Structures are given as C-alpha cells and as structure tokens.
Image: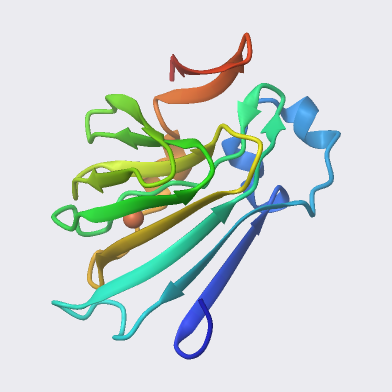
Length: 171
Ligand SMILES: [Fe+2]
C-alpha cells in the first residue's frame, strides 16, 4: 500500500514490552527489532459514520521465550463495530476474547477469512517461520480501546509447546 492517505505504524519489541510474559528473554533481545507494521488507508476521517478503513499488517516471525510474536490487540471503542481479517500469506492465529474474557484462537492460513464480532478483542499471532501478512477491513467509526487490554491483557497466551502452538489459559 502506498500514496495518500495511507498511514503507517511500526511496533518494535520496545513498544511491546508489556505484552510478553518472559521478561528475562525479552531483556536478552534487541529492543529495536521490528515486530509488526500496519499500513492503513483511511479515505474518511476517523469517527465518520458509514465509512470503511482498509489495512495490511505484516507481523514478523519470532518468539520471546516460548511466546510467539503478536500484536498489542484491542477492543473497538464502539463495541457494535465488527471487522474482517483475511490472511494473505504466512501462518498464525487470530486470538479473540469476549467481554467476559473467554478467549479462543482461529488458525490463519493463506486465504482464510475471519469475522470479528464488534464486542470481541482481537490480536494477531505469528506461529510460522515467515512474515504473517493480513488484510483487514473495519468501520471508520469503530475506534480503538487499547486500555482494557493494557490493564488486564488477554485471558490466554499462545506459546510453542513441543513445536506446536498451544493456547495457555490462566490470567
Ligand atoms: Fe480492530
């Protein structure tokens, strides 16, 4: 994606310190390493009713300890606003969490399409060896609520166990 009005956000390990469990492993890694970048096309102003935004997330492969690289994750500020995710390339898991903290994962493979209900928090996790590239489309008045996740996180973590991704409950 390029050209106006495309915007870009880059997140490094430094930006994601709070989301990973293994602080010792994190401290041994390069804080400047890129974890993910999002480019999004906002043809209307945020908050506009009836518009749509389009984004592409590129999430790098990697782990902090046994925990896979992931995005911050968020709820939408407007809990009635849903979102589509479509996997372009790579392999991962779309982790979702309901308002009552029930948490589950949907396997993402090239071509898979995922519907996120407006009331669910959502986070991308890269469980593969290649960048996970994901398209997203969401309403321009969905907004973001990062604070709920920043305060309590998700109720489960996706870790590698015996070479396979496992969703560990327990928060
Ligand atoms: Fe979203």
